[in-house]
Length: 262
Image (cartoon, rainbow, N blue to C red; front, side):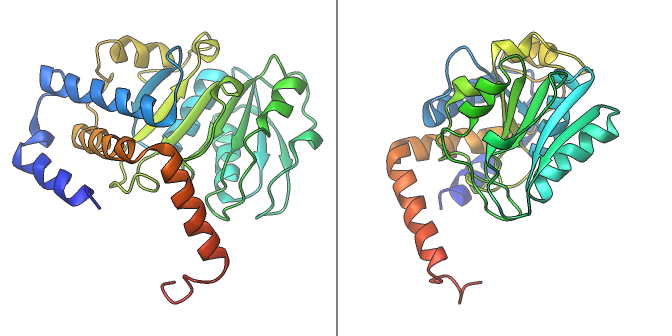
């Protein structure tokens, strides 16, 4: 509900026209990263990068982390999109697929040792099927040499993520943050940083500029500004209260309380 005010303030202060290399934009970038880290309890040794969308995040994971082979857990349209992107980039792909709407049992996944990164959707946006908090520990034990990438587009920021079990986490801002589309976020471990590849959005380039509170290209400065403000608002409420509120809303939805609105 605070987005309209923040947007009006951003327009009044001409945020969309400031230089993305200037001190004001760099301060906005730094504040946004700080508020997101606090809200989502992101470890200090994980990098936080801004990109254009969650879908771009899928592509960047494949480009940076899979020299040859990627593995995919597929249970709906968005996890399937990640697999398609890897195919389009010419990678060898392996997949463990269950019917749409099911939360996959990760203990049944059988990938070869050639898989360099395993791509998992925490909450399948097309169906709402969600993994448990500890599900990724099964993959980490079974494939200790593979990187693990996680899509939390429709479960950020309240998803309970054990970042130590992940190497790349991607999300965008138009769902749980209630913001206009056009901004994505990547959270990247030091383990994944060693696998940097690609062009202007390689992990190395993103870090090179991120260390200066900048991006390699011209970013959505207004979007980053709005994210910094909304993340600060959510931090005032507290992540524990937000999770309780969300679970309550989900329970009402499951009970059919929102049928009229739909």
